[in-house]
Length: 225
Ligand code: 5RP
Image (cartoon, rainbow, N blue to C red; front, side):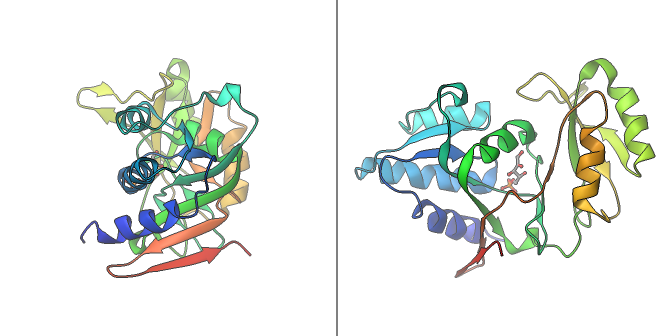
C-alpha cells in the first residue's frame, strides 16, 4: 500500500487546526505527514504552538520551525492529531507501536479535541486482532509485569532494540502483549492500570473524538457518537 492514504488523512486533519491554537503532535509515520503539513501552514502564516509526544516528534517539529511548549506550562491543548495501531467501531484504540503511548495519552487527555488519522488497515472489528497491545512498565520489575499480564490473558514479550531492551523516552520498557483478541477493552484497560509496575497501557478508551480514515484517493471523517 502506498503512503497516499496516510498523507490524505493527515492533510485533511491539519485543516482542522485554527490560528493561534496549541496543537498536540502525535508520533509515528502517519503523524509525520501531519507535522509536515503544519510546517507548510506555518510558512503560509498560520500561527500555532505544539506539544510533542516524543523526542522524535520534538526534533521534527523544531526542524520545521514549529514553536514547542512544555505540557507543564499550559492548562490545555486545543487539538491533538495522532495516529493509531488499531481502532474499533466504538473508537477504542491500540496505540504505542512507536513506544510513545504514555506521552501520547497524556497529551490526548489534555486536549479539547482529539483527531486520529489512520489508513483503512487500522480499522478492526475487535482490538488485538492484528496488533499486539503495548504496555509501558518499569524496568525494575518487568519480569513480574509479564507474569501479571499473563494472569489477565496476555502473552507479553519484552520489546527489543537489537540486543538490548527497547527504551521509551521515559526510560522504561515496553511489553508487547498478544490477547487474541481483546474481549472487553474498557475492562482490560482498568485491570492493566491496576497492576503495580505498569506505567501506562496502549489501550485508549473514549479518547478519539474524530477519526479521519485515508484511502488511496479520498478520506472519510467519522465523529464519535
Ligand atoms: C506511536 C503510536 C502511533 O500513533 C501508532 O503506532 C501508529 O503509527 P503509524 O502511523 O506509524 O502506523 O501510537 O506510539
